[in-house]
Image (cartoon, rainbow, N blue to C red):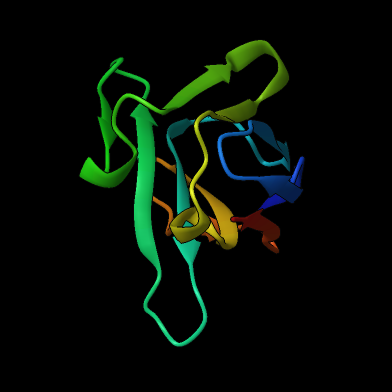
Length: 116
């Protein structure tokens, strides 16, 4: 089983930046997928960015050019650098990882609030 601990959320003004981190521990062997999702109040959880061990990276259209996902394999950590933040980026951000042959594992979430 994989445990995930997220950090880096908070309150920031529009135009500001935040960096989220998600550290995986436990059974981390075979992680091939790491991603960030977000869920605003009364909305569904949506993909923000994802990175695979193959090197493939995908972003939601709404964050392209502003957010950057990266991973440190030695630390089993995935990052989300968020720049030019907008009020509509306000949400709870969740990281997710998947190992070969296993289901997606979720973090507990970290709140990001962008004030106008």
